[in-house]
Every structure is written in C-alpha cells, then in structure tokens.
Image 1 (cartoon, rainbow, N blue to C red):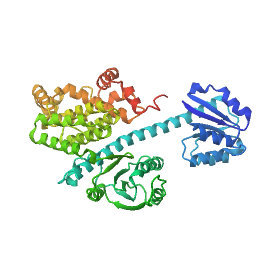
Image 2 (image 1 turned 60 degrees about the horizontal axis):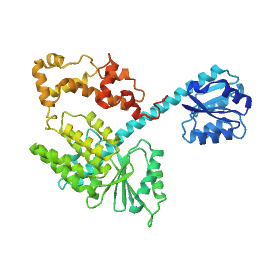
Image 3 (image 1 turned 60 degrees about the vertical axis):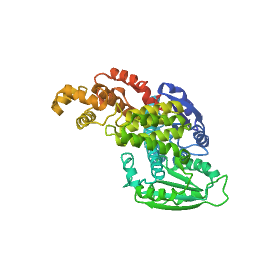
Image 4 (image 1 turned 30 degrees about the vertical axis):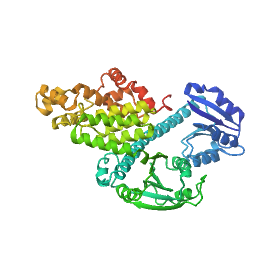
Length: 508
C-alpha cells in the first residue's frame, strides 16, 4: 500500500479531496493532511510518503520549494501539483525536478483518481527497478567477494602458487584484464578501530556508491581498499577517510592511492606486499574475516582435492567432506565451501556458471551451521569430476547438453529427436551413453536444467509471471504441471520462490 500526504492551505479543498475518494480502494493510505508548506515539508521528512499532492501557493513554504528541497535530498517521493490557472509557470518549474503530474483547480473526483493512479504506476515501476538492481548487485557482489577471497587463499598459502594460473580458474566470474581499478592504502588504522572504520565506511558507500563492490584487506594497522574506477578523482573520498571519527586513533591516518589498468596487475602488487604477514583479514561486505586462523583447513582441503584429482580414490572424497565436521565458524564454513566449489566447477566441463550461481544463492541464504555443512557436502558430491554421478562428459554428451541449452523452450524436446536429427545415431545407444557419462537419465537431466533455468529467471525478475517462465523453459502448454514440478524439486511454488527475493514489493 502506498502512502499519501495532501497539502493545501484551503481547508475545504484538502478535506474535500480526503473524503470524496475511497483511498483504500486504490491501495492508497492517506496518512496526513497539511495546512501549510512547512508542515507538509516536516511531514514528508517524518513519514517518507510515496506520493504528495500539494498546492503551489501556501504559507511558510510554497510547494515549489518543498519539491526542490526533497529532490535535492534524493528522496523517492512522487509529487502531484495542485495549481490554479495563473500558477502554470510554477508547475513548469517543478517539472524540472521530475514532477510529471499536476491537477488544475477546480478538479473532480475522476481527474484526481486518474492522476493518482498514473503516479502510483510510476512509484511501483521505480520500486521494481530498484529491487531488480539490488538483487542483481547482491548476486554479483557475493560472487566477486568469493572469488577474491579464494584467490587470496590460493596464492598466499601455496608456496609455488602463481597468480596468473590461479585467476584462470575464475575468469568466467570476473574481469581481470580490461577494467581499471583504484587502490587505497589507509595507514595507522589500529586494530581496535578496524570494525568501527568498516561500519562507518559501509554507511558512506551505501549512500554514495550503493551498487559498487568494495574489496578490502587488513594487515598490521593497514587497510587496503580497492574497487572498479567510478570517478575521475577521489578527493572527497580521501577527505572522508582522513576525517573519519574513530574511537581509537593515537596517530592520524595516512592515505596513499594508486590506479591500475586491470585487476590482475593490482593483485600482483597487493598479494606480494601482504605475503609476509601472519594474520591477514579479508574484508567481505564490510566485515573482516581472518584467513590465517584456518590455514590448516585451507591447505588440507587443497591437498585432499588434488589427491582425489590425481588418484580418483573415493577415500579422498570422504576425508575432504569430513573436514567440515571440525569447522565451527559459519562464515568460514561458507567461504571454504565456495572455494572448493569454484575449483571443482572449473575442472568439470559438464558444469556451467549457472550451476555455480545457483549453488552460491542457496549457500548464502542458509544461516545455520549444520544445514550449511550438509548442503556443502551435497553440492560437492554433485560437482566432483570423476564421482559416480559426475563423470567427465564425452563429446557426444556435451553436444546433447549444448543442444538442450539452446532449445530449452521446445516443449517437444526429446532424446529421440536429438539422437535421430542431430547425432544421427541409435537412440538406445545414445541413452545408455548419456546415462553412463552423467549418472542420470536424460529426462531427469532435462527436468533439472529446466528447473535451474526457471529459478534463475525468477531470481532476476520481480514481476515474473508463472505462465511466461513456463514458456521460457519448455512447459508453455502446461504451467500448472510446471508449478507442480517446481514445488517438488525446490520445496516451494514458483510464486513463493520469487517472493523470497522480493519480500517488500510482493504485496501489491
């Protein structure tokens, strides 16, 4: 329900507008009637309404000044101007601040409702765009933090680790070669002030650069921050850092900066500098996580995985999964699981970036340690190349998988059609070979790919219609059957899954 404020210094007008219309019928909550501009301005700051219907000429502060002030503050309020014939120049001035709707006095109920409904559409569209942007940023932000954290672990704690070789495993998730980056060294930041520094930095970034991923590393009174270039100069950012009010600051902070042509060059410099420190913290989403405390788990997981790759011994899998039993920290457990899944995904040609993204979403949503451990174990079993149900796919099986990806919308897609029209082979032989390579029947594989793709569509679009999603993934003639299969596979209906990503705007 959208919130509405009406502001007019003429009592008869504001009360008439408030009473002649059944606002709830149009999903509007009338929260305040204001008799002058100052009262309206203060009410907007206090109540954060979605829509304000305001007169132009009012005592203490006119409507144009209200609109100008609110616009400069960056609030999302939508304004409707209520003006007389002689005040059209005021209305034109207000339009410079994004005001698109106005009512000319005198106006009737139909005109008011029509204008309110158009404005409400603008509100919902803006909310929708904001939600979609936040969700897409959340997924990209999580992946990028996971990748950088894994690279730090891989390169620092492997004596012969080469960064160039390491980043090849992660090229499908981040650009290491073409995007410029800026780096800041913040010297003399004491450890007791580190968390408060991150808390203040988080608030600044949420307000100034809300859709920008900030990476950080903290070592021995030095905070290293780096991010994609977003400005010609960062003077204001430097001044913000220097003037940051910290509870512990025996020495003034010192700032140094550098620009790099790409992320690979930056990482070469940074990782070389921090190798000599025994305690290293990676800053993931403005929270510091110690790496060295879990060196044993990091090295042992790498050793066991490499041993399994070299020998194919199932015992190495059991020992690898058993590592998670001794982990008591939720965030590190998630970090180690993501690190292993990134490596395994890179080694398994049957898996795609979509598989990893799907896993990452589920891991990030789990907030309890034991279910998270079980989830990670299951994902690793699914992803391991050479495992009984994840054998390396043959060229023929890869061709089948590729055809499925390209023709997923085809409601009549079958292995028989692919075998006879694309492979020119006997369907029985193709079926046996596909099962041997993947460990699953083709029909189960096809259903799994369709559900995964549906989850991806639902997670990236708040206004998803179930019938449209069903059409996109090959169930266009039977959306009810699609919903049934989705609930059976995911544990909730497609609508509920979509609402879990957009809880605020789901009720309209």
